[in-house]
Amino acid sequence: VATEMYLERAAVVELAAIEDHAFHKLLDTAQYGASSARRMIMYGTRVVNAMISLITAAGVLTVLHPALLPLLITMTIPSAWGALTNARRRYESFHTWVQHARAGHLISALLTEPEAAPEIRVHGVGPFLLRHYRAMSETAEEEQARLARLAARTGLIAAAWTGLATVATYATLGGLLLSGAMALSVAGTAVIAIRSGSTSLNTLVLEINTLHEEALFVGDLERLYVEAAERAIPVGGDPLPDDPREIRFENVTFAYPSDHPGDAVRRPALDDVTLTLPLGRIVALVGENGSGKTTLVKLLAGLYQPDRGRILWDGVDAARADRQRLAERIAMVAQDFKRWPFTAKVNVAVGRSSAPLTDERLAASVTEAGAEEVVEDLPRGLDTLLARNFSGGHELSGGQWQRLGIARAAYRRGHILIVDEPTAALDARAELEVFEKIRALAGNGQTVVLITHRLASVRHADLVHVLDQGRVVESGTPDELLANGGVYAELYALQANQFTAKPPVRKAG
Image 1 (tube, rainbow, N blue to C red):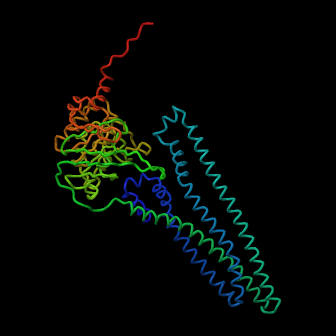
Image 2 (tube, one colour):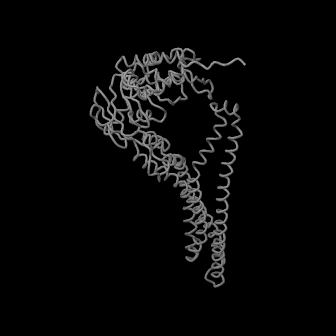
Image 3 (spheres, rainbow, N blue to C red):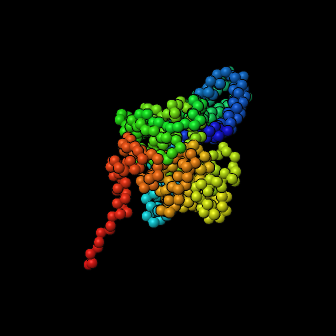
């Protein structure tokens, strides 16, 4: 239950929280809280048992002589201090080194994962990764050695004080015996009670210390619950128009958080952007790398909120809208869309996992994406597992995955389809077919927001917005932009020249 609560909260926080390294560190530490909560039950039971034994021994000592009970407690205080001190050090060290440990696990996983295996062997990356793994492991071992030295020193101090307290206890017992305040038979019983009580008290201290250490990790889990609630995607909000005519960005500015909190100046990914996306059309976003295209569509999908400005759906501010309802209207084929380690059927149907899974909807989505041949070539069709590192798993090429990604977006049936570089892994013929499919979707009334570097592919767009360094520098139809001779025309000419320029003639030598 604790693990499920952890995953539930992690799944509903804002994208900005997942990308925040401080919050991700909390995710790393809090994941141990669930198993710690389970172990606390076991240690709690041991604490109760030790307390029962201690109360029994303490009762006997109190009856024999009240002065023996404080001395018994004094014998145990040093070991309690030592155990709690070492537990706190281990916990603080874990917090400091948790990301270092995750990086070590990542490097070890890279050495064995199928995706990295070809390059490791061709480029000889194995020794490089092993050197890094060895260096990180040695650093981690140095930290363990440091903790061990501190624990040994603390243990020595605690043992010395415990020895002195033990000597004082038995000296007191001897004094009582010599003074006649205690009979020999009673003293023998007291020795047995002291040894039993000391053992029970030591056990109690150790179990409480372990309980305390586990509780620290449960505390991390509790902190995650609190922070995840603060950074969760809001529930509810203003309804969006049923059939909006346009989405308008008004003076939108957005900058990604800095990895260094002290940085005062952050270059905005979008800077005072104003543009309109008419719905039911094909709208293309073009520009060089880093111009802000992908950031803009993430804002459109509600994954980020603007730092300044508004995004209006026919006058309804998306910042106050019901985010779940907004997301339901969006289908996205990102450039780095997730390749889920499930069957081909699930990889398509996960586009709308809340909808009933029907063969008709699956078949229609595969057809819309032009992915029929991809499915036919799979050993078990849509029931083929697309995870090669599992028994019976199968791997797709980049172009085949891209078609399945488009089928996933088609299955979602969102009002707005965002396509980020949809043909990056396709050959020329497949690229032409995909764009024909995209035009067909727009012909059926669906809005298509297209991001691509291949400007020849946007010639059928109804509207093109050209971005440069986070600003909109041109807007218009492809013909208008070519006629104006601006940035779009320049980029178009550069790409066209790659196909029209004649190769240099080599002289016979």
